[in-house]
Length: 173
Image 1 (cartoon, rainbow, N blue to C red):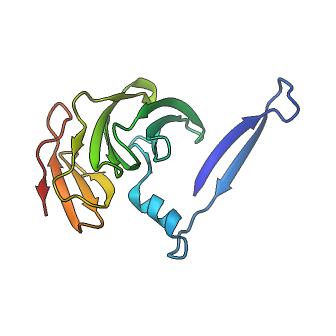
Image 2: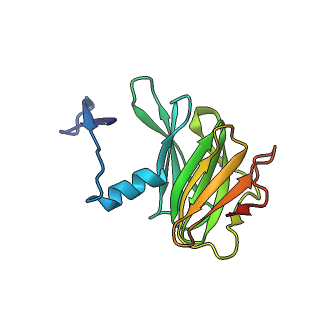
């Protein structure tokens, strides 16, 4: 169930009206586009529920929002994903990684105050040779590894996360 609050001025006056919209999403296999987006985690909320991150494959951007206690979203930042066609995003503490399916890369970011995203220098790296169908990226619960699932090549790449947030060489299985 998603909640979004939108303010608008229907007559151009300075008094804004507020609308709260609710949508309940129950994906089925008859709605593959929606199911794909939800499974890939194209939109994620951090563990403290005060920041939301979304990938946009159309613009090759990642957008971050501050999440208020009532669920209202405020745009915090928009940055390049570091590659093409980002389709999945993962967050652990103040570290974010995006999976770019267009060029089979991953790129890292730090989350600063107010949910601001800052690219992690020298963190963009190609997936291992033979990568095809980059589908989803996740952190392990302890944040020590990043896992990338590849749908077409039917394999996983497991990257260790170094102290500086950059990824080490993957183990491919």
